[in-house]
Image 1 (cartoon, helix red, strand yellow):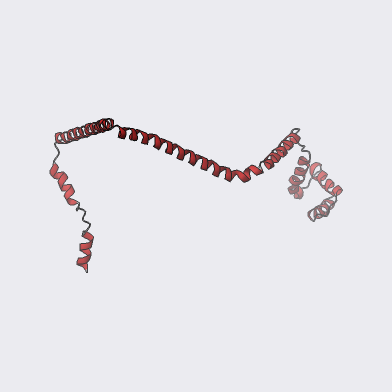
Image 2 (cartoon, rainbow, N blue to C red; image 1 turned 135 degrees about the vertical axis):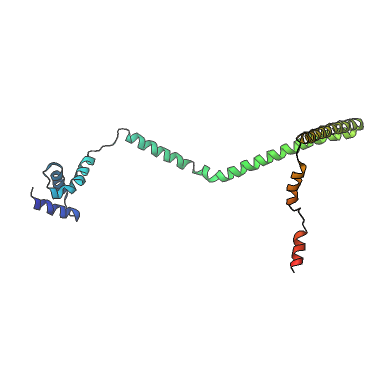
Length: 187
C-alpha cells in the first residue's frame, strides 16, 4: 500500500470520515505491513484496537451479572424498613429509658422499705445507728493513725524547715483585696 493512500486514509480517519472497510485497511497496514518510520507513532493505536477486539467475556460473567441484579432487587425491597429506621431508633430509645426508669423506681421502693421497717422497730434503728457510728469511729481512728505515722516519717527525714519556709515566703499570699487596693492607689 502506498504512503499517499495511507496519508489520505489517516486524514479521513482523524476527521471521522472513514468507512469500516477503510479502517480495516488501516489496521491491517499498521498491524501486518511494513510501516515507515514517520508513521511508527500510530502503530500503538491500531495494535491496541486489534489486541482488545480479541477480548471475550469470562464464563462466569452471566452468573455474576445475575447475582448483582438480584442483590439490587433485594435492596429495593428493604426501602420501607429504611424509611421507618429513625422511628425504630426512637422507639428503642424510649423503651430503654422507660426500662431504666422502672428499674430505678423499683430499686428505690425496695430501699425505702428497709428504712420504713427499722422506723417501726426503734430497737433495730438504734442498733443500726450504733453500728454505723462505730464504723465511722473506726474509720476516723484509722485516718488519725495514718496521719500521725506520716508526721513521724516527716520528722525522721531531718528536713531543714527554714529553707522550705523561705521558699513559701517568696510566693506572696493570695489576697483577693490586693487588686482592689492597687487600683484605688493608682487613681
